[in-house]
Length: 177
Image (cartoon, rainbow, N blue to C red):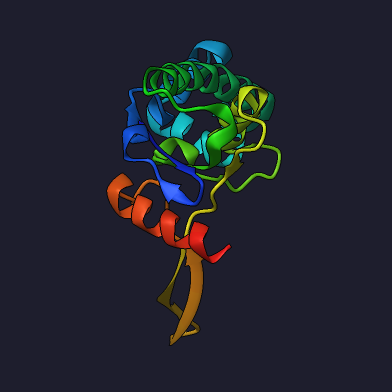
């Protein structure tokens, strides 16, 4: 699934909270159909992050197929979101930003693969040109580096964010901008 919340005039719009039943698993299914290589779901899941699929003794670059699968699923997500916004009377010129949450918007390790959220925003901006993607919040975590604890700041995983908690953070971010 992919979750959304819209910010309009620096305020969270409760009527825009929406969970769409498309996300990372749908991208993976579409990718399997596009590539047609018979390997495990886990291999495809890893390929979504790395851009490579194990084939025989080597690795096959499938970045183009991944991006095509993401574009396809993004169009389905956008259609659901647009219908929801239209049904709730949200005017295009009132939208400040959109927060997109869910496993399907995870960034991968390969710079040639765009996150699903970018493809969603490409379509979103055609009808809501002033809207911008609200960045995911950051938090400080402790990691062990060379056997020593080190505090580092990292983006909170979109898979781990609950849309209600994320919406509170998004509103705080919008007010600070």
